[in-house]
Image 1 (cartoon, rainbow, N blue to C red):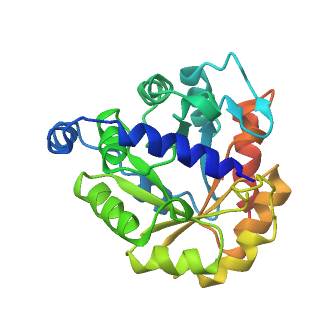
Image 2: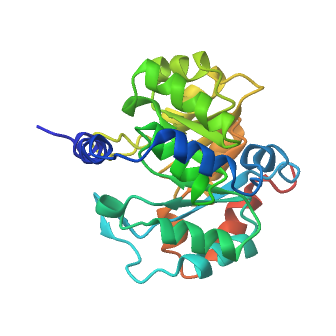
Length: 264
């Protein structure tokens, strides 16, 4: 039986197979874009003991359906930054998450913090597109890429000035991420095959991430209690989506997550 991830990747690979755009032309266009804002540097330069928060602009989920159908990406991003978000993540996958390139461009225009393009990057053109649309970082999911793709896409991202958040789900995937020289590693607590959350996954893997690598815990972070456990485990940053985008007070939800490090 095909999993969520199988179906999503199949759709993206089918689209890439019929993409006739010149890679060289896209690379030239990407190199001509204005300077990036420095996604990794922002996460590393967080305030004191507070976790850096990457807050997500997310309209829907394949498992839960619509989260905020009428979401305004600019207003949402502004609320996140008002609450102290260090970076913004924007879903651009249209078919499965209801996102768009426009969502990213509108969110980035509304704030001054760095923005991650959250999507299923499976082709070199996807990396170029992230830079062209104005993203400061691109997501590379280890389970979606073979070794050659991971090496090539990571190198291309850095060549174009992007930071690459390399997402892993288990220890073998972490080894693959570190082997390509990943400087930013995200541990996704959500199984992309079943979309179920394992809250122990990130805590278990935290000690395996070298100190020099910026570590990000992703998915399933419901509030300050979860954030506190991940901060204690050693994560530099938390990528939070559904719990903040559906909050009645988004700025307040971000402040509460940041506050778990206060007084330490």
